[in-house]
Every structure is written in structure tokens, then in C-alpha cells.
Length: 351
Image 1 (tube, rainbow, N blue to C red):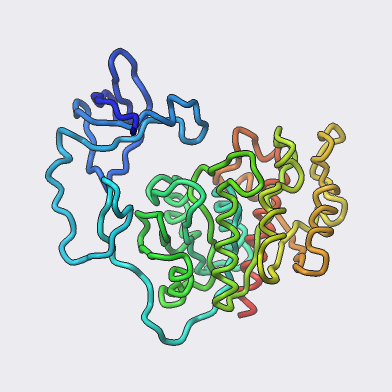
Image 2: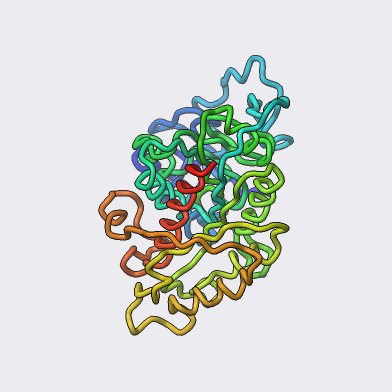
């Protein structure tokens, strides 16, 4: 059974709910449950916070009993998302009904933290480039949760946001990931960044993690004949061996993908990757990560060397930390995403 509890809203910025004698951080998808005000009686799902999860460590409002029981619903749309759950709601799908497809490059990112640096780097390489974000599975399903998306849209660093498959709440909705990619040309996009929302599922197994969504995105892009790039998940200092250097998430995807993709890497790293100090943990050296990628690609995938500007991104005001590590503490993570953003801009120019 769901772990649902009644509570009272005692603050809205940030959202705080009182349950019994405890004040707890919470989040509400107002697109589904409506506006929230102090004094409202709400039902929240407390499971993630009670389990001590990291990025999902807050209660989620399930329903607002005070002002959320008179929603008008939709008038004409009949395609449901979150179908057969208590949160099912109709959407207008963006999928096209045939016609000529515009082939735009697709950059597949391994997790949401790559979105902001990739979009920034693409805009630096080609100012005015119309690159949009297609959100798929692997992380948060709600398209409203990401502050990065809100910031990037406000800065005009992404031109749109489509939530595909099980995800919902974007500016446009797609029933399938391949349908979303097929439709982006009609939206005026010149390039796509495809990846999960905030947070990522993980079970410490080879295939049981949200990073596998990158395989689905790569296959969808390849099937449509679109230039396909995969941003590698790299890390200078992740405390987990499986993610330090070249993450096993990227390693698995590149081994399983049924086609050739382009894998961007930062130029500085190819020259010796002098992004780490001498005290870098074993397995996390930049050269080791590069060697792993070269061996893994083995002539099957194309490695694309790209210039990066770590300092410029650090000064941009966009998110510059990953799981509590700053850009100075984990430069390789951001360098990979910056290289990928520049690469997709180059690919867009060549289409």
C-alpha cells in the first residue's frame, strides 16, 4: 500500500507540511493537484523521505483536500497519461501523422545533471541554436520538478520541453519517445537533448538503473535516421567505484546499443586530461577514463574531440554541482557534458 499521511500546510516557500508533531519538506505538482496555500489539509506520500532517499527525499502531495477536489478536468483530450493510476489525466499528443521528417541531431544524456552544461555549451558554440529537451524515463516523471528546465527556458538556452512516454507535464506531450523525436522538426527545433528528469533510479546492478533509458533514446534516434550522440557519464571523484572514471551506466549503454553513435570527449582530456590533481583516487584518473572509452568504442563508435570552457560555465550561474560535488571537485563530470553540448551544435550545423 502507498504510505499516505494527512497533514497541514504550514509554509509554501519552501513547501512544508506538518504531520503530527513533525514539520516535513514537501513538493506538489500544482499542474495535477492545484495551488497550495498555508492551512490547506493535504494527503502526502511520505515513502521517499522515510527511506532517506537523496534527490527524492521529500514528501509528495497526493491530493489537496481543502481546494483540490473541484478540478474541471480536460474538455476534448482523450489520450491519458499516468493511465490507470489515481493521477491519470488526458493530454494532447504531439505525434505527427506521417509526412516528411526533419532529421535533427539527438544528444542522449545519461542523467539530468548533463542538461544545463550541454545546453549552455551548445548555445556558446552556435548562438541562437534552437535546441529542445525531450524528457524520458529514468528519473522524475513530472516535467514540473526540474528547476534546471525552468532556468534554461527563461534564459532561452532551450527552446522547448516535451515529456514523452510515462513522463508528463512538459510544454508538449508525446505518447512515445520515438514519437517525440519524430515530431521535433515540426516544432522548429534544430537539435534535441534527450534524457531523464531529475534524480535517477538505481539498484547497483548492471541493467537495473535509470541510465538504461539512454539506450532507448539512442535506439529511437537511430531508428529515425537522426545523427545520434551519447554524452558519457564521467567523474573525477564519485565515491562509488562503479561511477568513477567512466561510469558503468555509459559502458553498458555503449556495449548494448544496436548501431554506431558519436561519443563526445573534451579536448583537454585527450591531451592528457589535466583536470585532476595528483591525489585523484585510483580508477578516477582522466587518462584511465579516456582509455576505457577508446577500448569500449573500439572502432564501432566514433569519438568526437571537443573544446570546452569549464571556467565560462562555472561563471554562468547555471547549476555547477553534482550530488554535492562542485565543478572544481568533479570537473570531469561537467567537462563531458560541455563537450557533448558543443558536439550537438556542430552536428546541427552539418545537417
